[in-house]
Image 1 (cartoon, helix red, strand yellow):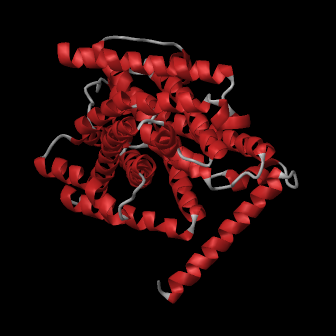
Image 2 (cartoon, rainbow, N blue to C red):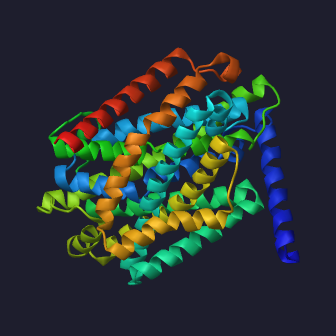
Image 3 (cartoon, rainbow, N blue to C red):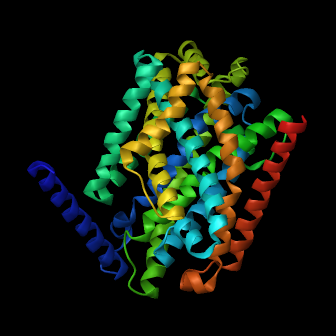
Length: 434
């Protein structure tokens, strides 16, 4: 390590210590209001990036273009699921000092742990494929860089961002939070430009609509793109050693701050997802372009309908989403491997391995958006595994102590798991039996 890098690490560690000190002051009641919450902001924003990744762009835009505002309620439902599940995951890390994969390894039979690891790695690969491919496509359309070279550039950029981890948890948290805010601002601009019908947004956000087989497939994809398996695993790791509680009272207070942060971060992610869909409904569906089914066509169609500025903002948000979520996906992959099987591989090797599927897709000329949608359906099929494990362990008093799930939490999360499992079973039947 060079002298300059060593000084930078020392400064970062000092900033990290100040964050922990500020958190202690908040826990002890020395500061109140927003100042008390600030030291706890970070983990939920990192996790929330997984909820606005390029897979969301693909499924939300296709849903809005095909069915207008009618599927907004799916996003609202999925976001409520996400809030509850991410809160449970964060709580597990605070209560046990262990991530969800580590808890599984501690308490499951070895054979089941390995099955969970393999399934979770497949989910992480499907996730990173969607995220990496989305960023590559955005860079290709925004700057005219050939897809294969755009893939290399995105890989290098995400690796450099991941290197921020050596400077402690705070720099990476700030970087990812800035990406989340940038994506939110982009869709605030898109909302102003696209002029959606606010009445229809309000109505269809709370009014369920089923439709036909195509809409149900997209609904499963929307849920798979919103409630992410790797984010559930990752969040428990982000909170396990960040602010270490010294007693039960501190666990309760840290959890309360964590819940507030999750509500803020996931509300922002929910707004972005709603904005993706109602923008597509307002611009594409209402103009007779309900056939829009891929991001490239969406970009080229936006230009004549709303102008080049709106199309560029769309690509900037897609690029920010792809780069930041790819970083988060790689972090989750490390947590999954280390937690389930107890070993890690160098970061550059994991980054290289997770890049390979995207290189293959690009080299074969496969439709990127179709790949994105399929990857989200794969994620939705994998999703019950971490949810069931999370529900099971967070209701165990001997494991969670004072942060054990209340009965209503267990009931709601179980209902969500049944809904997801039911949708997945339907999807499998439709896929194989037509």
